[in-house]
Amino acid sequence: MAGMVTKHALIVYTRPDCSYSDALLHDLDKDGVAYEQIDLEAHPEQIPEMERLTGGERITPVMVEGDLVIVGYHGVG
Image (cartoon, rainbow, N blue to C red; front, side, top):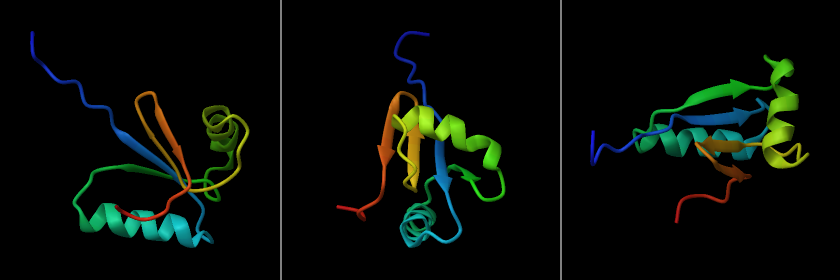
């Protein structure tokens, strides 16, 4: 399997009242990027995992792809 590229699924933690989450999801959809959304209001049991990933931050959105964790969203480019 030499040369095989392993792709990690993009996971996005959001809250429904977060305009930055809305903007991120809009941009991902517009660009055709596949992702798994975890709505923290609908799934509060996921909050401890998000906090673990962010070092205790409770800011959304949080994007996770493999070992890469990005907190917040400032638009594309």
